[in-house]
Image (cartoon, rainbow, N blue to C red; front, side, top):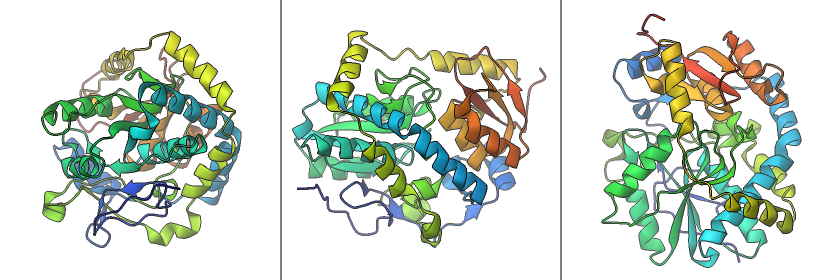
Length: 371
């Protein structure tokens, strides 16, 4: 029997199936408008916080939509294998009958759903929630209270899509430490890909092209990125907006279904998971050091303007004001969506082979040191 959890009133709608995830996010539809790119960038670099505003949703062209479908077809088997390996590593550490997945919205949500579907195939019905965590603001403690109250004997496993330089992994560790007297949660983050080497629990450490990074709400259950505005969400969860008007181009469940159909035999996933465990991986944080070096080379004073890895570079191109994109190898086919968006937005590409990431997005600094 599939797990269905009860949502409090006022949560944001979603195109995701209720048995796949419960979004613990307040519905801000009709209560918050998107902020134009230039204005939003000026506010953020002038001391405002990104969580107080929503970016304008990127409307993909027909050509870019077609590119997404081609990428999904070509990468689904690799993503499916990586999800399976991650799941096997998680349940080797935790009892799957006492497990609750808590994904970090938005990028973690489809990763968490795929984990739920793989575990369901093994016979385990795992509750899955998605909650907000925001740099310098922390995790949604009301959402955590709801989860712990609903599953008092369960172990929480936090999930995200990928790591960049480890900002969210660090934020999660701080949040768990700060709330330890309330929840006693393990901050170890499970991710599909860990190119930043920020967590010991990953499916791969390759800088993987995850198709769900290629779009915004239309591959994220038609839900916006999360918002922290106490004036709008006092005494309730962090908020988000629902984009029902984009339903005709929603590929959220298509992405999940295609990857699910490519799940490998369990024996293959177990063998790879065991091989990774034998190396005794740990969080090394080498990605953070590399990002600090890149920032220094390009005269960028705020390391938050340097977004390493395919997933983070795509985010920059989709909703920030990119200055340039660095690429390790211009012939790498995994960079096709990077090149497509950069061309569409007239963002220069620069070859930078000395980095370990496949690419890195640099946000245009409004106040930049001389180089």
